[in-house]
Image 1 (spheres, rainbow, N blue to C red):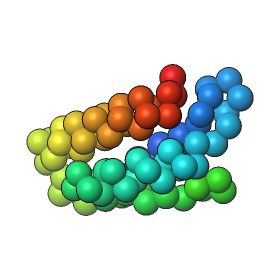
Image 2 (cartoon, rainbow, N blue to C red; image 1 turned 180 degrees about the vertical axis):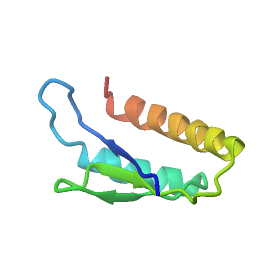
Image 3 (cartoon, rainbow, N blue to C red; image 1 turned 30 degrees about the vertical axis):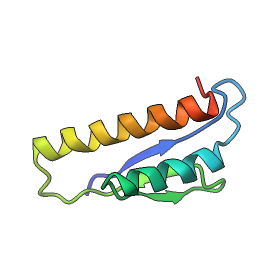
Image 4 (cartoon, rainbow, N blue to C red; image 1 turned 45 degrees about the horizontal axis):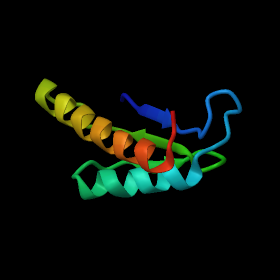
Length: 80
């Protein structure tokens, strides 16, 4: 099994957890057809556990959705 985990922070220097942003990102990804879950002590970690039968095309689609939704959240909350 392969798991992908992303941890969102508001500032890379202070490492302040981006809880609200992570929640919104998971909801936006769900609306775009990509399921993930929030976890971690601060609920700012997003994890994916894709099926073992994932095709290269599906991997590309996952990262296209993920990139588009991350950009939206970064712009809305001015995360750099």
